[in-house]
Length: 407
Image (cartoon, rainbow, N blue to C red; front, side, top):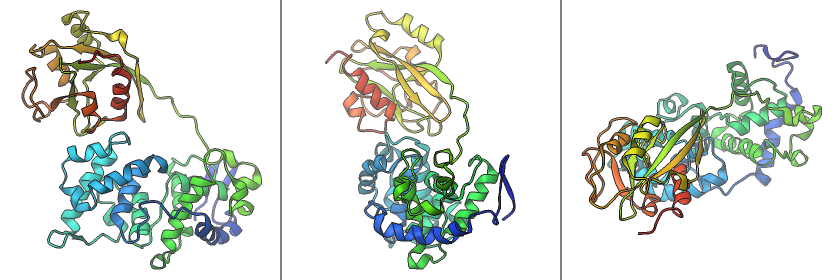
């Protein structure tokens, strides 16, 4: 391994890695896993790469306890890759709504179609699953770590993973300093992980190791409240023996996310239904349903002027906050109650099309006339909760239902 500078004072190469840790890490981890690892997760099914694949996508940036509530309903509705590939996005979205990072679901749905097309047999409903890393990496939404997990856990092939748990364990046990997001440190961690992962995939050793290192990071070697006293690596752990457990992996100050202000518009008819719009396939909450949202103050000013004050109630509602990976949204709800049979004003039509022009059809008949080919529908808050709406909209429904008049 080439010499790698990881901090002003430390240089790490194969000679400076703790040889005792290199020798003992994998055997100890496998022994610990037999007695203390997690063996009852619903996706831990032998010879079912589809379940492993779905679980790995759900687990990206998401804790196991959160995924458990989504995994079983998703698998009951889409038990095979064929059923997922055959479904429309509108059928898939409700089973992911609230889980966040919706691009994962769109890519999973797209990749299911790719797998069926490239590797499926429509007559026997079987899949000749790809057995190489390169082939998995050609599928939408699948990176090296996800592919490694599918290979190791679902197909009994050699595969290497590198999630947050693995990075934390390796940095602490082997005393690796530096920014894990930097390419030089990332390459070092991948090289170390590949060295430690057992090659004996067909015996189950690769799968056991893969699950074991994730379990160690999730249960003992956690970001906070580390349980070093129970860890099988305690005596060979560099960070423990040097008093730097909580210093590794190193954390570097990130620029705080900017906050963007906007308005979320609840347009309610006399039946108590809200007007919902399906967002464009890509971008924020892509393909999901929301009430209209805008950051355009002039549009809001026009909207407020056009409706009597009795119909617009911005002060009734609480602010809605939602954080994305790159910015925070602070949204002021505005409530518009339409009179029966009133034609939807042009200003509201403009609001509905602000986030991109796309085609679609109105989902149900309404007492208000709407422009054709707009992906919009009238739904009560309760009915909307059963379609694909993001968590922020669920929060909005919870906040606002108490404020709105009953019908």
